Length: 123
Image: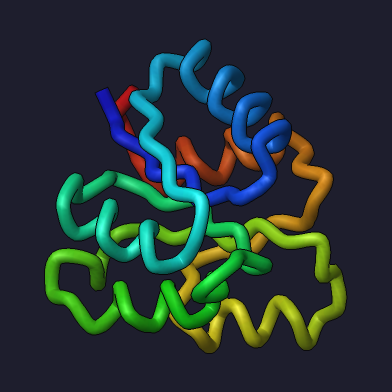
């Protein structure tokens, strides 16, 4: 079963997205800020990371850059989740090391297609 690290500081967003992912058979682990995300990713080695960009203590851009410095995290897909919808915001996320980008509110069906594409045959 594929493991997804969901990095989200908003409890309601986190709970809704986690339930939807778990119903699809994914194991979901959580972090509420960038520092916790880095620690959790390195400890748990998730198959994919959903990274909120606007986070306390360390934003998602910085957390992604930190993760990309570790060999074990270089190939892990990281999908940025953000309310910032400008093309410059997308570019900044990709430049920070994110693999892909989704705007909030998240359209779950579209996000699920991306997740499944990155994870391949894993459920």
